[in-house]
Each structure stands twice: as structure tokens, then as C-alpha cells.
Amino acid sequence: MKVSVCTLAHGRETHLATLVRGLSHSRRPPCELVIAVMQGESYRLPETSFPIRQIVLGSNGIPLAKGRNTAARAARSDLLVFLDVDCIAHPDLIADYARAAETHEGVLMGEVGYLPAGATRAGIDFDHFESLAVKHSERPGPPASGLSACRDYRCFWSLNFAIAKRDFDRTSGFDESFVGYGGEDTDFGRTVAETGLPLWWLKGAKAYHQYHPHFMPPVHHLESVLDNAERFRRKWGQPTMQHWLRAFRLMGLIERDGDRWRILREPGPADFELTRQQEDQPYASSAVVLEQLEAEAEREASKVAAIAAA
Image (cartoon, rainbow, N blue to C red; front, side, top):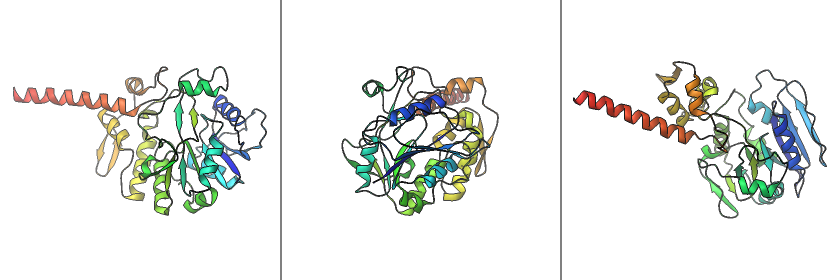
């Protein structure tokens, strides 16, 4: 079984170069790495034993969905492995996915370990990565061994997954009407489920997520999250990203306007400070921020009730 690795990139030269170096340590190298380049120029990358093909799409608001679809459709292998630009593939990742794909159709989702700041400073050292990496507390994990069925399409995440090219073609790929940040992964997971393809958690096929500052909930993408939430609702008749929307409402950023949300104000310094990932955190946590906001809302409601009862 031939395996193509697909990624997309805009800027992030150091992350992409580290992804390439990581793949060069694969015990079973990919047949190719296909990069959807979402900027005007291709990258200068490390030498590898496998070919790298860069498809330059430009930087004029290309949807992430189009980047992934472009890489997938250009790939020449039976199995597509999608890795985000900030991932480092464990040496067994390719082989783990290929082995699982021999007996399981649909989407295969491997492990992800989050690295703290500075973890890659000394280069590729998988023992070091493994000693530092932590699992995301808000995402379900794989079984203790083998594979287990994922029965909730909302768990799908494009950071690290594999799918046979024939199965990807059955889904028609990611929906390119989702522009900006938010919703396109959940939409693809729903499409996979509606197509009748299973989703699987896979022990192994591990990717290490390189540290970079982030905001959760993603206040820096407020407008596109609202637009994509509405797009998902119209398409499927159900809401999505409700935990982010709840946080935005408690922050006073949005309010309901009939079936839709509308922006009350743009995020300010205090909002960014609240949601900013700290350097000692390997990942940003929406749950931690939402818990804090809910507690503050409860305290405020108690004060109002006390005043009303006085």
C-alpha cells in the first residue's frame, strides 16, 4: 500500500521544516509529501529520501478546506495521511496507519501528544518528545491497544488522520464554503458519517504537536466562527461549536438575534489575555476558560438575586 502525506502551510517555515525532518525518521517513509502552499512562494525545505511536491495556491483567503482537498486530489497513493504543519510524525506513524488501513475502511485517527515550548530546540529526539508530550484533556483518546469505533462525528479532527483515497473521494472532500476558522472539521466528520464510512480511534500513529501560542476559545477568529456556525446550522439543521459560542456570550462579545448570533463588540485586550495560551501550557484550553466564565456568571447571578431579595 502506497502512502502519501498531505499538509497545508502558510508561513510557519520552522514548523514545516521540522515536520519534514520528522518524516525523514519514518521506519516506513511515505511515497511522497504533498504540500498545499497557501502563500505566493514555495518553501526551501530539508533534503529527504522521498519526493516533496509543493502546490502553490497563493494567499488570497484560500479556505483551509481547499488546501486539504488540493493536496488530497494531487496525491498519488492509495492511502492519504493528513498532518497539520505543526505536527511531527512518530517513526511508526506511517506504518501504523498502513497496517490499520489494510483491514479497516473509513477514517483512522491516531494519537496526538502536545509538546511544551522549547521541546524541539535541540532537533528531532523522539525519546525527549515522548517524555514531555501530554494528551489533550478535552479530546477523547485511543483505546489501550488496537482500534475502537468512534461513534460521535464531532470528535473528528484533521490534525492527524488517515483515509483511503477512494474513501476520501466518496465524501467529495472538505466543504470549501467554510471560510476562515471553525466548523470545517466537524462538517467533514458529519459528511463521513452520512456517507456511511466509519471513524476509528487508533492506538499508535502518533503525532507530536509543536508548541505555538494560540487562543482558546478562538476570539481572534470571532467573525468566521459565527459565520461557519451559521453555515453548519443551515446545512445540517443542528448547531455546532456551542462551547465557543457560550464562552463568547459570557464574555459579552455576542448575543442571540433570532436563530443567529450577532457581534456586540470586537475582542479587546482583556479578552485576549483571558484566552491566551501561556508558555508553560502545551495547549490552550477552552474548558478552563469556560469554567472560569461560568463561575463568574454564577457569582454575578447570586449578587443580583441577593439584591433583589433584600
